Structures are given as structure tokens and as C-alpha cells.
Image 1 (cartoon, rainbow, N blue to C red):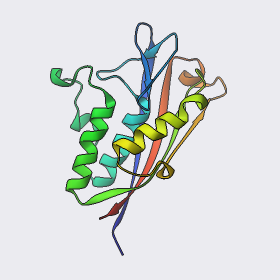
Image 2 (image 1 turned 90 degrees about the horizontal axis):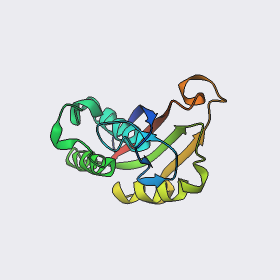
Image 3 (image 1 turned 135 degrees about the vertical axis):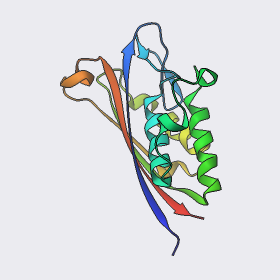
Length: 160
């Protein structure tokens, strides 16, 4: 039986004016975007962190420190692709991804299909292996006050 590894990722970013809102590699029309060293894609960061965790390689901040000027403004699709390659080097493939976006607005439902397709493409897996949910926090906390967004992700890796 192949070895299985589970990883959990969590990410949060502040919403600010004059930034594009990019979630799951999809640019979504909104009055604010997420603040970060990269494009601040909270979904892809959580998934990346989950893969890094499953591999026992620390976290996304060690792999892509926000003090590195060479990665300023980098697309999170590139970050995920880089970690995917490290996963392959370690002899693993994606079993499945399950993620939850926490955002009061905008509505994520119209974009979930494209997000899943983007992630499946980067991770070279079937779209059926990617699940993305979105929820609000019922106006509670920083998410509810629309100050930021968060995401949690769990991945299962299977040894090739």
C-alpha cells in the first residue's frame, strides 16, 4: 500500500483598496483586493501550505519569504506550481484537496468551477479531486466586518 500524507493549510489576508482580488487564480470583480507580497491569493496559499505541511517542509513563509524582492508580486499560481514540483521530487501526487474560503463578499459560487479547474491543472490531477467551498462568518470577526478573507485547506498526498 502506498504511503499517504495529510497536510493542513491556513491563510489570511487583509482587504485593501487599489488591489486586484485574485482567488484560486481567478480575478474577481470587487471594490478591494487582498494585501500581500505576492498576489495574495488566499486559496492557493492555503493549498500550498497544506502540501508543504504534508511533506514536512515547514510552511509557505519559509519557502517564499515576504522579504525576498525577487518574489514581490509573484502570481500564486507560480508558487503552487513550484511546490507541486517539490512534491513530485519527494515521490508524491495529489490524492485530493478540500478547501474552504471564508469571505463575507463577494459571492464565490460563480467562480468555484474555474478555481477548481485552475487548481487541478496546476496539480496535474482530475477536477474531481479538488473541492472548494465558500462560507461567510455571519458578520462576525474580521471576515464578517469585511476587513479580510481567510482560507483553510486539507490535502491528501499519495506516494507514487
